[in-house]
Amino acid sequence: MQQNIPDSKTIKACCCIVGGGPAGIVLGFLLARAAVETIVLEKHADFLRDFRGDTIHPSTLEIMYELGILDKFLQRPHQELHQLGAQIDDFAVTIADFSHLPTHCKFVALMPQWDFSKLRCGTRKALPTISFAHGV
Image 1 (cartoon, one colour):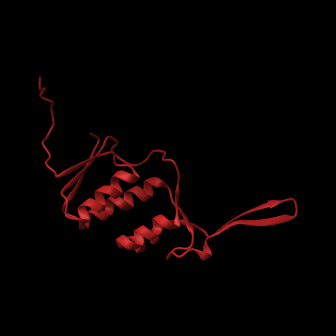
Image 2 (cartoon, one colour; image 1 turned 90 degrees about the vertical axis):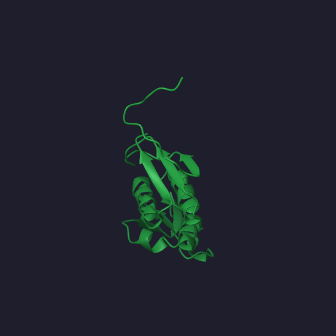
Image 3 (spheres, rainbow, N blue to C red; image 1 turned 135 degrees about the vertical axis):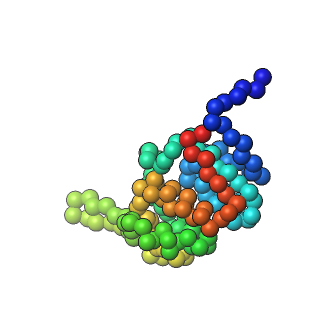
């Protein structure tokens, strides 16, 4: 039996993505770029909650370059980690050096995930085939 839910509305789209986390938003962005009418459903009204991490790796930054949104990302406050190292007593060792990677960004970017998610949602303004429903 179908219930009548107050304040409900019908939304039509070719693709419905459930979950507006990092993966859901990027998938929605990619589908919208391919002109697929898409809606991303998210139960939270904002992105102010804990995610798994605040690191954006060079491979992800390279995808952002390929999608044409890297410059917009780099304009937002972030930190860049070009090397990882450790010191044991008097001995210092470099564990990772990103300067040799075949990517445009040779660093790991540090940015809170909620800022990164807001940036990805902001890219939808140029894509008329995507919409977001928060708090559903």
